[in-house]
Image (tube, rainbow, N blue to C red):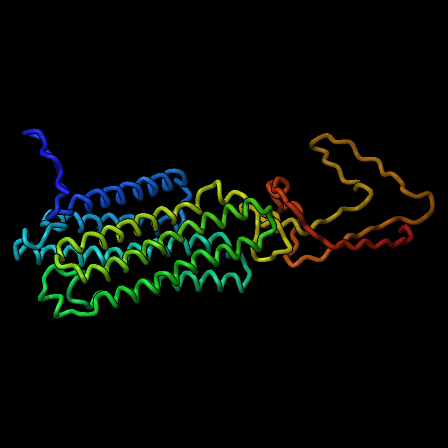
Length: 378
């Protein structure tokens, strides 16, 4: 529908008419560029000084997404979104190249966004258990494999998704089929990214409400599956359109929505409100609710000194010699030894930092054995 005539001298970026749908792409592209940028900057600001691999992966994905939007803006400057009847031949070639570049960058940005969440899951849950570590590593490998496979599928093709040149469309059939394969693999990895962390969350010994919040945070990626399916559906229906210049608008718009939501959803699980209950939780052993810190692991060796104090004094400090107190009137003395089983090496108590006493332990089971023996005094 044509917009009403604007007052003379009014400047506008683009108009939406029956032969020009570029305005829809401008609106969608600008919104899907701004929101992920804000989310990324907020995450980097909140976590400043404590960045990890998943943060840098998300930053790299945001940069690639920005480049992908830039390619789309270049295509819009050449007439992307307008009817082919309004385009010149040289502009059609430039638009095709810009769209193809945006599709390749989309796959790269999407793959790294998935990798960011996979690395985050590995950092949270990988803690010594071989089975869980293997599960996290397989998730990381699956996201990388999707990106590499998708690029190998799309790069050899000689035209973008919906080429504005009818000659190019005849020379490069099967482009939609390739995108259907990429989408099927995309949906599979999305479900894996949601289900694996959710399964590991349910193994932890915490209250049900924090568990459900964490599962919901990881489940925020599920709309990306819907957007991906809608994109390939719109792509297939665009083949029946008579005007390729207008038909390309809807698939590209859903592609922008998908990458924007993917970037935003990759940051949601890292918010402190969702992950705070898991600060001291280990998923490696469901029978334990506390994730012992390094200082705690060193405090497993607890030594008890002799019952009666020694007679050594520090003359320089001016301390008086302690009085030796007899525990029993008979001619025997008592010696006690306390032992417990620990899988960690025991260290002297002097080597244990005070921070070990300040850690919060939810539950800790230790088996103690007390032995008593009476020996004659020497």
